[in-house]
Image 1 (tube, rainbow, N blue to C red):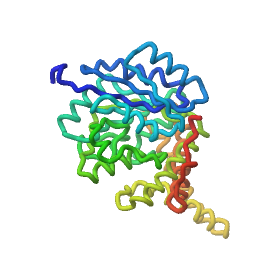
Image 2 (cartoon, rainbow, N blue to C red; image 1 turned 135 degrees about the vertical axis):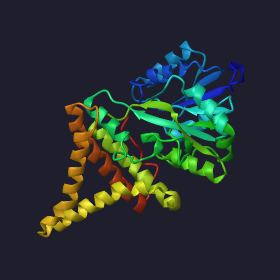
Image 3 (spheres, helix red, strand yellow; image 1 turned 30 degrees about the vertical axis):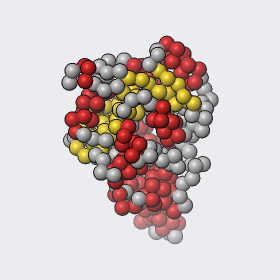
Length: 333
């Protein structure tokens, strides 16, 4: 493609309490070197840190950055408002705790046009700075951490179940009414399913990578995965037929451990078996995890059970009781 043939793009970024990551995320977009014109819309929620003050400084320094208010602070609400205000037909979502690789926008638009896809995503390349955050990042990229979705572990290019963040045709978003504002977590999966139901193509490409900075503290990880589990349970209630089998692994593991502990309380030592087998598996993964320091391997011993059991418990809550708008991930607040 010649530089003149690249379409103009609107990049959308929902922002809430991201003082530590916002500047790097914005710079990763502004320094892309995309051949066509683009704008960056920051949907600013009611942050409790200096995020919004930083956003104002960024917008004053670069005319490509536009600010809009998202007083409710919900990702889906902010994204829909940004979609409504976007000037261009092609939409790229970037989160404020992520950083797309250098050629992400250019190659992404090329692949979208080549494939005719309505929604395109790449790999969530989780990374960490502290030992515990590195352990969490490793779990994100392992089939034994958060499952085998292509955007976590990679794979061949092709039609996909969902997409991480996403590069869209605005017409596809309009066709399905944008993001469902009644959903707090898992909104990307829900959107992908609705696009596919209208005959749209959802595509995965391993060429595209976005650095993602996961939660680096135990309590924040618990809050995030509990909330995510609740909403995954809710989405499974709504669309059981399309729910992946891997969603059931953590809740079933949690159920087996709890049943085993109940059996143990009745005096049967075999009740220890589910928990023992699970912890033995976690220990094996921690020992064999590549390229991690000793401290990070110890972190894996904490991170994996935290992610699995918080998510599994949340899933049961969402599947049985359902989720509501109070089930919000407050781990970044």
